[in-house]
Length: 560
Ligand SMILES: Cc1cc2nc3c(=O)[nH]c(=O)nc-3n(C[C@H](O)[C@H](O)[C@H](O)COP(=O)(O)OP(=O)(O)OC[C@H]3O[C@@H](n4cnc5c(N)ncnc54)[C@H](O)[C@@H]3O)c2cc1C
Image (cartoon, rainbow, N blue to C red; front, side):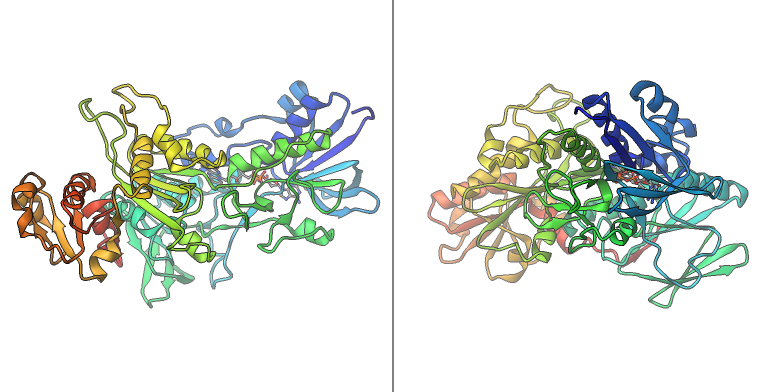
């Protein structure tokens, strides 16, 4: 850049701060000013639940950078407690309110970047403003939660909304000794995930003493002595000493809307692939913008720190004359709750169905339950992985996984494979790390690729739990009798794998046979024996475990 350009940035956390720092690295001449209405710049909002739970003990640990660091290291001016009230696009000015003095003033820009984030949704319910009801977005809010717990010697909490912030808050409150109830209007926590993957999460939460009220909606709050009474749609109530509202976020678009900037169909600021709005001098990034879903190509809102940071960097590139483009989001994410990791990339089956994209003739899914490392090495832990792919060319569409260890590593590999438009055949061939402590010679990702590739090559036809329940197939359970005795799919016949060759005559040649075992591996071997002997056989993907996740996973209202 030749001229001294004035770059003003609204919002000094994930997207705004990365944009500012990158812009400085690309241009020593530009004047860069970062505004935030809060008391902090560049703080770790992702760490807030752990600050509440005393895992992060000191507030200053949440501060990734300070105004002083921005000034000294980057020559960027940070103006805190400075709220931008309006944008005058014609005169390229913003109106700033100094929240400490109450004064307002104008600042001129050559380029304006909006990274105002998203606001936690506070539904307009009776009693929503009562003391003791909190959202989790800023350091001062979490400080208030900590003080409230301490001052009121809080013993119980209701967390409204079982998304990732709700689960992280639940874990931290439980670890502080509070008894916690999650009220979630969907029949599952982590509502964007496919239901069957969340079944182990429900069990895990219940094991940790969390009370789940699923399919339940909060209708209002009332003061009940020193605690709160939380009214539910079912007519029941919950009592708690505090309430955490974690029912989602809404993009902060007030400024953009009032300035006449284009808003997308989902309510986020509309930007092009360079993160530029419909005003050539204004760019927008982060939770406030609507971007393209990399897989479906449809607009989406994905409030995550990774995309916000990358978008900030891309906007800075564009502002400084580079041709960087944002590829779109996949929603690659993970949450860890009481040691259980839930992770996904790309759309879930549920999302594809909601968007009317899922087509049984075009899409397939497989389930597997690999270990995070070789089973001969102590501490092997099983995870459950679901892979969604295209039936015609094997293109990977999405993956979800749950387990104690090594889960996000597999999802990260698959996430990158999706970005590179890879297929299940690529996963089959992927060369990945293996040592006894962290992998297997055939990694979970390879296994996923192999299983999916087997399906596409028609080496193994698969069926799903719904097929086991809904059609008239002959159900063959190839587990050992003791396992069969402990639980089975209704109507199944037990012939253990090791006896299958000698007892093959017991099976019908004129009926489709659905094989299953615990996880799908022994029944795959059985399936190979049967198909090579002229039987019409399919293997139930993910086995009896997935069947139990599908059929018995939905605790209506479960307590400790
Ligand atoms: C509790 C919690 C946990 C999270 N955990 C994760 C996680 O584990 N992984 C993950 O990927 N993401 C996580 N996120 C989400 C992630 O923090 C956000 O996606 C990311 O911070 C978005 O960046 P942003 O720059 O768009 O907005 P923000 O980081 O929210 O920054 C926006 C800033 O703009 C300021 N602002 C807004 N309007 C104005 C105005 N008019 N004038 C001046 N300033 C203004 C706000 O005060 C705010 O400081 C978490 C979020 C929360 C709240």
